[in-house]
Image (tube, rainbow, N blue to C red; front, top):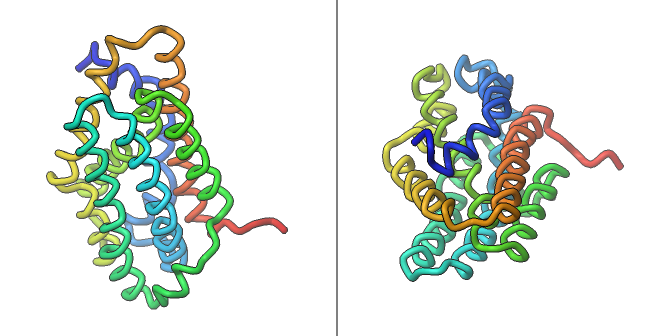
Length: 222
């Protein structure tokens, strides 16, 4: 693992990940202090994000060099839409938010920027660049989920969200993408390898920004 391409990528964002797990949004999920309206705002924005993320995954699937990898990313794109419809639909109802109104919500600035970056990277970059851009959303959510499972939550709605991303089934999905990343590493030239690093680092930072957006209930300034 220490010599793998994925480990090399992760090493470049250890500070970002440390900042994520220390963010008050996540510490608040664990100790129950996160305001309900901040969580509701996050859930509604995440539903918007997942639709764009599914489009990015579909773009990666379209560039995959093998049928197996095409099928995997296409399936993950479909799964992202399924999560949007099921988990978020029920969570929104539990939080007293009209799913129809949530579906008409405008993406917050950070949300729009993150999705736009993903779509640009996956549609104009190489297959490896696309994998590097989408990987942090998989990997960071898995790591965060495991950490929050360890901490637990006093709020059952927060615990339900935690169980979704900290479970073994999601871990298997993430590991498959990490394995693809490691297969790509040895075949990359220096310039493309650097671009993958830059995409991985940028979207890891967007992950921190997304939590922060939810905590602040970010709106457009004008």
